[in-house]
Amino acid sequence: MDKKNTLKIIKIGGNVIDDPTALSLFLDTFSSLEGSKILVHGGGKSATALAQKTGLEVQMVDGRRITDAATLELITMVYAGKINKTIVAQLQALDCNALGFTGADANTITSKKRPISTIDYGFVGDVEKVETSTLELLLNHGISPVFCALTHDQNGQLLNTNADTIASELAIAFAAKFEVELYYCFEKKGVLEDVNDESSVIEKITQTSYKELLDSQVIYEGMLPKLNNCFHALEHQVFKVCIGKPEMLLDPKAIFTTLTIQ
Image (cartoon, rainbow, N blue to C red; front, side, top):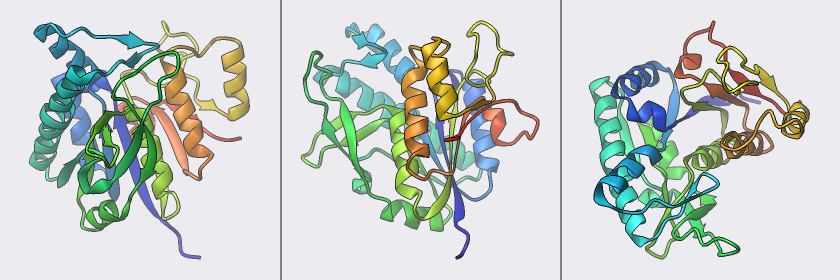
């Protein structure tokens, strides 16, 4: 059986995006990675800052943004417009050919509007299907897709969708054809045993040790959705999942967190 080609899917968070120097350093690293690669970016902090400037109320529940019609309009401008196109332009300057995407583009990511239970999240989407054919065509021609955190419902409606989830679902969709490596890059060195101690990186988390960390409340709040997405990917044939600073992508001495089934 022929060995699969490697595909790196890398998600960057708000703190990297909001700092021009950190973003520039990351994009320099991304552009120098060899082989096929996809970038997924958030942008929640930029959206929140613009909302505050325009007097738009920001509503969050358990770290998730309530997305009414006005908020959707704003995040579409910020995510798909300013942030996405700035990243694409900077990658072109680094000789990394890139193309910006929402899930609506080439019908790549279809979602359904999250049903109302105890909370009405508004125009928030839960991923239902990822179509990889157009993306494969681009990757085969050396073009790197750059995804923002928007999908669509195939009925003309854009939906705000968690960027960690988009990265995970893209990784799962490509796992049958590629050896997929999924990286979540943010400002910390990895998952920390003590949030106040940068040196307390947990270098390996298995499904068993994850349950133990949850029971002992070492991991909670903001990291939970990210780690759930990590294990969801691993359970669906994604080859490798890591969390840490962007240095982990190139520096063999970098310390970061690797997640495994066993």
